[in-house]
Length: 284
Image (cartoon, rainbow, N blue to C red; front, side, top):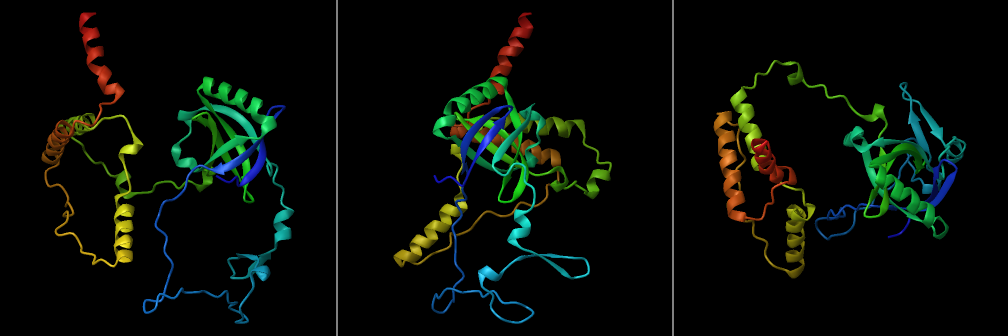
């Protein structure tokens, strides 16, 4: 991995120099736009709508459009003059329980590696934070944008999770929230039974991107010069359930059959501990 930013964690009077790395990467199959007839790449020119001439990258600035349609032009110098107090620092603001932070706020994940001289304070803060069971709420500026973020520990490494600001989270405004929709006790009990039947400890390695794998196979077949044949049949799209109770009951039975036939799904720790707790209550 290559670091994309260098700075320091500022924790009270302690400064920990760190390097920042992207913790995730997209695995999408990338394409170019090409001419169908000969496969030639499609190129786009940067053309000014006023003078009609092609514009070089060096002559391109950022423009903010006003309600009147007029444009305010901002240069690189304008952005350099803006105050970013955390331009090269990750400022620790406070420590909070992780469950108090709604995951909807999280935007992107980064790893933090200490510089050689920062290894000891890095490990000290890491161990203290891990022992506390909390996360550090911090402020950081990346790519000329200041963000809230959290610091947590994963596999012995600090993970910086940048966050959206509160005014960037949309409020759900849907009509059904105002409707008085009645859910019968039997339906709720059956839905809870379905959830219990499908409980299991989350193992991300059990899942894979079937669409990307199939697309890669299509590309490989094209390269090999083979004929690509669409699979016969296909799953039909399920329509709305006419009888909700019947659909839930059928789902529970299907989930039970799938578990018993596969024998691979493991019950969650919570579910596994449930019988023991019941026996303890009876003996008490």
